[in-house]
Image (cartoon, rainbow, N blue to C red; front, side, top):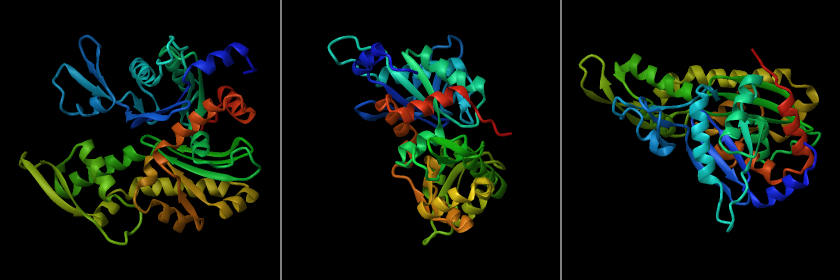
Length: 358
């Protein structure tokens, strides 16, 4: 990854991209413009012709409402590529949508940095890089999501100071302690926002014989889901189909009931944070005690999660500014300052080594 004058020339013309390729949402950061795309990672496909009918928000609106010949799929499962061909088509759509071609000439293909979960294998990492290259990127690099999230949250990743980031996405929760431009402690579990949604679906079925869909579960989670007692508890309505009569049914529930319903995945996330702290060297623990744990990702918005983790770890806990976009902003900052030796070293080491936790 040495300096290449040709790359520098192309870089001046192209709009390089930082991409958070998430299980639930894909965000794209364009150099010089900021985040220009934030859409669901959903693709609607014609089963017979394999033609892409819609991508992103338009495709998500079709989930559960498509005719038999069209299927709406999420090509990423637990943060990794489940359907390479569909991800490639999705990336091609987002890259072409985001890449600016208003310079009066055909601008060069963009250089792309893609955030991937830290627990992925070498094969999965290569799949993400290849998907970006096949989707018209000039160069493609991967960066571990907790590192990108820490950069996006403004943590001092290159200093000799311990920083803890907890990135709770749709498919994975990443817990990492970072110091001197490297990940010292890394835990990755496939329990995150999707599992909380599934817990709400199971809760409605178990307690009320009510069948609800993913979109209803997500809506209720955002409105009333919590990990810690609220100052003022909330009541929300679950709408679905009665499993006994087959007829439509609406049930009003409290945030207290919902908190019990999602306790399983929430407890797993909190336990993983504690496990990571137990492995952290004492000098770095002292830094984290002083500066606090930072929460990023959509899961950081779950009501009271910061207070719950603070109570369990006896550490200060802060939610990052705009936690949903931390990974995309971090990846974007890396492409904006591509010649920064700290970021180049991070990207180089990410291409070479993977730490897989079983």
